[in-house]
Image (cartoon, rainbow, N blue to C red; front, side, top):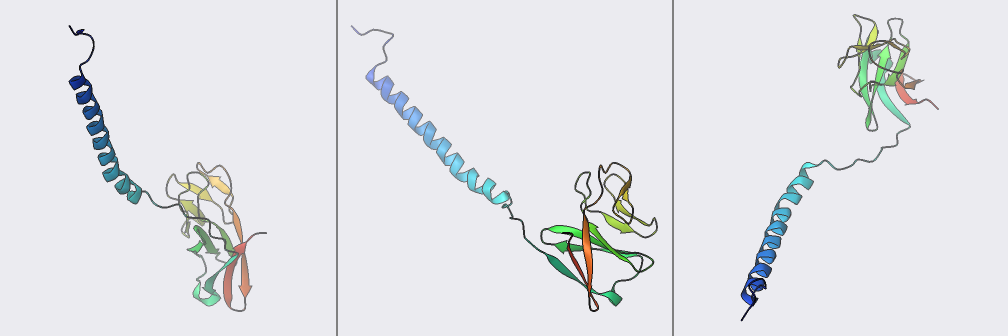
Length: 151
């Protein structure tokens, strides 16, 4: 007579098939969703090493204006003050990495995210930004304006 607590051979075969089919189903689900999720995740971009960027001709940049320029992977803001002097800073706010812009009506570099303000020397003067903007060097090469890293 067979013990009631011991599984029969048929029971063990059924359990084995249940685990095999369950594992196959899980593998199938993963094989469908993994490529979709991998496609949706943006690829990592390495840091692009740039030493300087040509912005344009001096006469094409109006006084009391600002423009955003790509410096490798990062945005940089070039500001031409009302007196004609050029200044350049990282265009990434030091608070939450929003992109800043020049506001000629206020005479400041302004972050729209949380109303952070920087003076035209890059110093944080109002709002939540904890530190000044990183400064870049503006170089005049003939009639061209170039931005380079402050070394």
